[in-house]
Length: 66
Image (cartoon, rainbow, N blue to C red; front, side):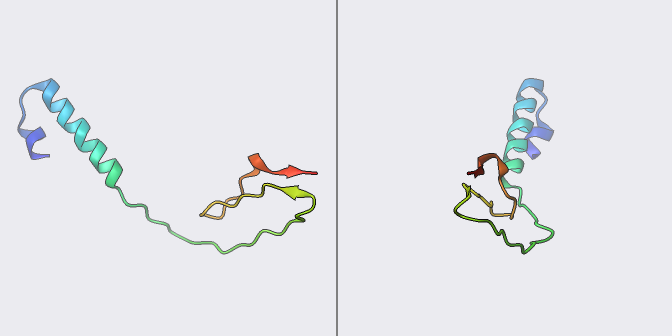
């Protein structure tokens, strides 16, 4: 950040800030505000490909009902 703020060449300064932005986004921590506990009940004989992701969202795109 210091290099970017001291740089007087616009293109070089732009690239330094772009790199800084990339580093900040990649290293940014995630803060989960809650962790819901829920269960999913379904008939395994009739419903296939039920996927629950790590944050307990059901992925409906892959579900098959026979």
